[in-house]
Image (cartoon, rainbow, N blue to C red; front, side, top):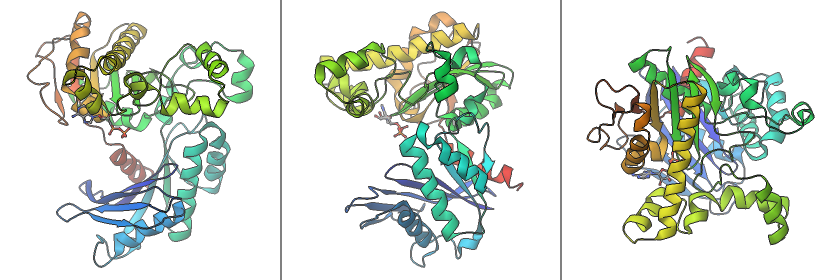
Length: 396
Ligand code: ADP
């Protein structure tokens, strides 16, 4: 069975076409800078040179048409007909409290996703465009919606309620939702192969966006992201947790509108905001460790401490932890980040294996035999998780 996975962002569409007989990737790529005159489309097939075109792509519909045409094109295609694609999986950022698991897309589901636009304006809007484009181009192909929030739907009220008047929860849905759920679910699934499914686990998705989840016997009980993906850890450009009074104070002092302040916290903060160097940890590490840039060093320290603090908090919440997993760009690749975090948490019972840790992007354990808390690197694969959901829901 062939499954197309689409991830529509506000100005991009990423795709992967899977052959689910062996879970291989037939093709993948992305359309970027949609709505601009300098849009880019890249299509990658293993063993072939990348196909890249630069042409204006005005809408998500155009982007998806470009993707579909390329998949079946004589020169760059990997399938003969779109009829070979038996299911389409869409990554949807916000499922609110409505969607607790992946679901077949129907007109009712589309309505519900539209109702949730308020909670994730840029992302859910883009996903709806993507779904509508597929409905037009491939009306008979079933679609499945997979939600970033769904895996977190087990978080208990004591951890999802904020200390604001309860009526805001009732009237406006102000609560913790959590994000990156598909990644945390994939990583947890891989971990159970090593430790079973009845353990206390902390999964750390550390990429440009970063979040941690506390999972007890398969159910998420807490996570660092909140009402929006701005909360929790310090990230590439996002501030993570800050004293909420800073918002109104800075808006007043700097004469910023709510939209401008939102932009500061989402795009100008985090590693970039503190270091003034970059949002990319590799650049910040270079500045800190090779050039002795003090602000870059501080940015790294604040980031690492935010991870260490939450792992400590979540192991307190679960009254212990059996395993910790690192994934995403930083979690899979930054040897020094994992080392510092694991060494700082030795008190939990982590017997760190520095030699095993000396790898990038490889699934493996990085604690020594007999370690009370076992730590793993688990490269994440959200797209494969979505494709598996499509197969499960279509009963294939
Ligand atoms: P996203 O998918 O959210 O854009 P990624 O999961 O690709 O993000 O993670 C991007 C982050 O991973 C960047 O901060 C980048 O610097 C970091 N990263 C990637 N490779 C390395 C590496 N070798 N060492 C340190 N950080 C790395």
